[in-house]
Length: 319
Figure 1 (cartoon, rainbow, N blue to C red):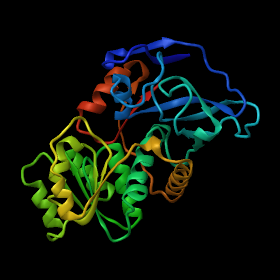
Figure 2 (spheres, helix red, strand yellow; figure 1 turned 180 degrees about the vertical axis):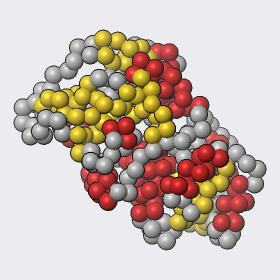
Figure 3 (cartoon, helix red, strand yellow; figure 1 turned 135 degrees about the vertical axis):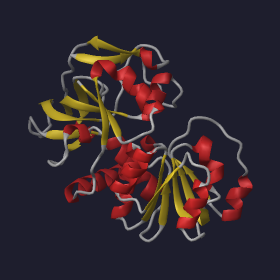
Figure 4 (tube, helix red, strand yellow; figure 1 turned 180 degrees about the horizontal axis):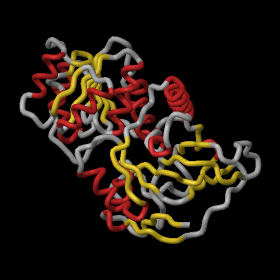
């Protein structure tokens, strides 16, 4: 089978298409025919060698995919041909097939395409964990989602609206602002424009937001306190550098700053996340937006795009 392989950490050119042996599922395992694989910023950090997760080399990247069950190992009762999305895998999802433990695959809603399904696990699990497990969001509160036009941001808007929160989103382009509005945000602002923080504060009548989901902490964290309400919570989801920080800003607001990595979630927390995703698919809340599709052999271009573009949804690979 064809798969993307990384033999050394580094830039996107380290992603190489190779022919490797198709895995065979053992007891408790399934083989998924990958119809689409999701590309996430975290994939680029792992590939570069800068992430806390450093897989043994060589490896195939990718945690998100959607496809069909091709084969099952002993003890697995999932019918062949079942449509699934993956929540991580044993062999990586940037491939024609991926091997998973049975608990790493979950039913894909009939109304969701494979391309959309490739954008479910990391974005929606991250959004749910940030909103409800870290920030403890409650109906009636106001959440500011920085970078809301990306896959995690879109997922957060959909979950937040479902939970009865007031949603403010930011994006870096007019197309992104339009997408945020269409997804259901109450307000949308251009975070590249001067004065946008004042506009956000104005949208809350000066009281500030209760929760901030921060996708680029090295750029925004210190500024966030200007729009954060007293006793507010900031959840750091993304970061690409360091910054000087004044702790008194957090003290003055009696604020909490939560760092999070999805893969630190406990088994019980992950079960809660999977249940929320299943419920969201059943009721039509989950509706991933696919920005663009790349061929598997163009994975390097997809990695460059997911970092350099102004996000407008999910980037996927098609084997």
